[in-house]
Structures are given as C-alpha cells and as structure tokens.
Amino acid sequence: MRYLPRLSTFIAFVILIACFPIKGSAQEAKTSSQINFIENAWGEALKQAAAKNKYIFVDAYATWCGPCKLLKATTFKNSKVAQFYNSNFINVAMDMEKGDGPQLAAQWGLQAYPTMIIFDPKGKPVYGTVGYIKADDLIRFGVKGLNK
Image (cartoon, rainbow, N blue to C red; front, side):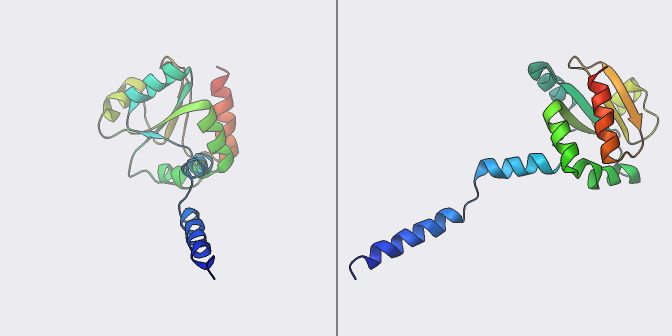
C-alpha cells in the first residue's frame, strides 16, 4: 500500500507528458501537408533566397480570384507538391492588389491571376505560368524552373 502514492504520481506524470505535443513533429506535419508561404514579403523572400542560395516560387494572386482560391485549397495542400516546394524553394504568396503587390505586378508585367513565377536566388524571373494548375503539373513546372 505504501507504493500506491508513488504509482499514482508516476501515472499522473505520464499522462501529463502525453498531453503535450512535441514541437518538432507538429512543424514537420505542417511542412509536409502544404506549401509554406511567406505572406506578402517579397523583400524577405529575396533575403532568404540569397542566404540559402535557393530559387523563389511566387504565387501572385488576388483575393477575389476563384482559381487562386482553388489552388490554395487543393494543389498547394497536396503532400507531394508541399514536399517538393518546401525543399527546393523559398515560397512567397503575394496579394497583387495590396502593399507592394501593385508595384510588383507592374514591374513583372502581370495580366491575370493566379500567376506563378520562379525566380533565381538573385531575384531574376526564369519561368512562369498563368492559371490554375494541378499537383503533378505544378511539380513539373517547378522542375523546369529549377533547370532554367
């Protein structure tokens, strides 16, 4: 009977530990379930690309754009797409109608949304596409961009 308080304390400790998620695994789950975008921060994307020597993937969108919303809800949440883009690119989503968006839209000559552009680590555009794109096609798009 004198071991009962120690046993109940041990069980309470185990239950308490089990209730707290492990930080690393939560981040890994997020990484693999969708593309992780820097939101509306072109300058930050350029800094990270230069520091990591990675290409930049830009999702240029407008909030009213139906195909843009469909991309976010489907293609960008595909686990294979997420794995590929999170491993190979600095990903940035830009609302082209607010902040730096209008200036960048003019500079990049954007005509329609969604427009997806791949830039080299120095910020030079190397490849682009316009419109909704399925998961396998987006991976092919990324591979072509990396090879430019």
